[in-house]
Image (cartoon, rainbow, N blue to C red; front, side):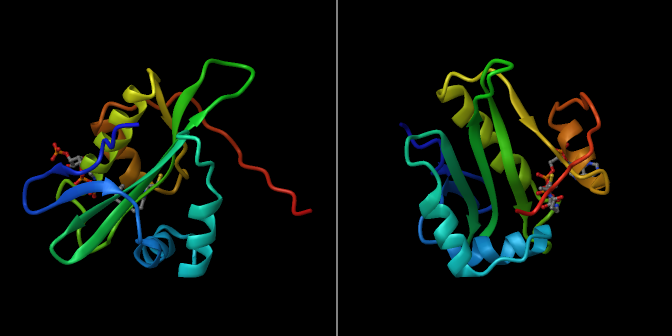
Length: 152
Ligand SMILES: CC(C)(COP(=O)(O)OP(=O)(O)OC[C@H]1O[C@@H](n2cnc3c(N)ncnc32)[C@H](O)[C@@H]1OP(=O)(O)O)[C@@H](O)C(=O)NCCC(=O)NCCS
C-alpha cells in the first residue's frame, strides 16, 4: 500500500507512518487521557493487524513527533465498511497550528486509497474543542451514544 504519509508540509512539519515512535505516542496518549507507557504502546503497535487495515501516522516537526492519528477499516456486518478514526491527538504545545488537520488529511487519504468513501469517529461529549475542529473539517454529528463497559 502506498504511504500516504511522508508528505512535505509547511512550517517544517511532515506526516509519515509511525515507526520507532512508541515513546512519543505513549506521551501523547497520556495527554489524550489514556495513560500509557512506551512498552504498552510497543505491544499495541505490534498487535495491530498487519494486513493493511490499520494505519498509524505521526506528525513531526524539527523538535520531534507532535501528534498521531490511528485509522482503521471498520467492517461490521450491519453496514458497509467505513474508515474509523480510533484516536487523534496533537501535543498541547502545538495545537491550533494546523497539525491536527494534516493528520486528518493523512487519515482521509488513507481511507480513499483503501476504497473507503466514509470516515467516522467518536468523540467524548466533554471534548467540545475537538467537536468544533471536526465540524470545521466537514464532519457532522450523526448521533449521541452511551459507552458501556464490562470488565471480564
Ligand atoms: C482536536 C485536536 C486534534 C485538533 O488539532 P489542532 O492541531 O489543534 O487543530 P488544527 O490547528 O489543525 O485546526 C484545524 C482547523 O480547525 C479549527 N479548530 C481547531 N480547534 C478549534 C476550536 N476549538 N474551535 C474552533 N475551531 C477550531 C482551526 O481553527 C482550523 O481551522 P482553519 O483551517 O480555518 O484555521 C487537538 O486540539 C487535540 O489534540 N486536542 C486534545 C485531544 C483531543 O481532543 N483529541 C480528539 C479526541 S476525539
